[in-house]
Length: 395
Image (tube, rainbow, N blue to C red; front, side):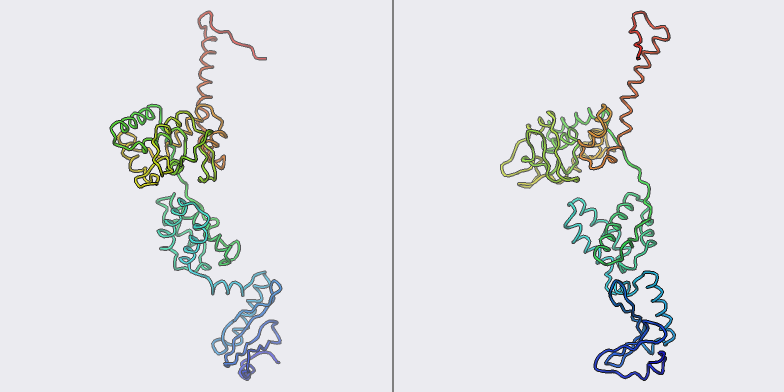
């Protein structure tokens, strides 16, 4: 067969099945003749031990010379280690981002994530991701698209960064599912916005005032005994809100609380005497396994935010969140001289970096000790009263 040209291709007749005619000048460039008489230009190569073909266009729609240039481009990509046939196949079968969102939530978040995480994912997917890039093909999303979405929400940096995290995880799963090439996550190298970490700790007076308000609310019945107990347990144990909300009586043992499933997995939490006193004062309802009972039979309380708003307003602590009670527990532990590693274990942190946000508070007892020691030394060297404790010579 001579070099492919318009005359030779026009002369090709259809047969009972497809057949190929290959060019004599460019290896892998040819034309496919189908039983219908349609003729398409092809580029064929081998990759990974398999023969791959790329359709370049239909004879009559493009010329032989145009097809030959396209074939050279394909062969050049192959020489560079690429796999154009696979990329085209990905493009054809690629779903939209909206479809990926649904699959990600069902097959990943729904099976592997806790309810609270599922709720965060659902919010990011429905409110921020689908409206912006839901109609895009998964394979077509580029870093500039992710950067634009992230930038649009720069006014709320925390939400922008959480959305970026969801997107990154989702596109990682797209690679696992074969919807994008490996290492193509478009979220890579998109910088996060700086977040101002809020550190609010209750001081001694504020804790005393909060304790007074809880006692008042208990006496006058403005809040239920279970609500009061929940906040006292949060203060005394440093637990996360959900850990107290869903606490069951059978989790309580002689050594503490054995929680089978927390944010960081199974967790054992000590129960000091003060916390046990709170528990012992609570009535137990037959058939309800939960410590902090809800309004419905056999349920736990689901809303502590509204009671907290009433309590903090009454105490004059309008800027204090429930989670700040956990910060207060940690700050008191660190300030008292407790090792940072021990504080991390009490809080159930899986990484020491999380606990290190309280590390600067460990300087307080050291600073106080330095002041007291310097005051004693100053009194002596400046001619303090006779009978003062003499300096010890440290050898």
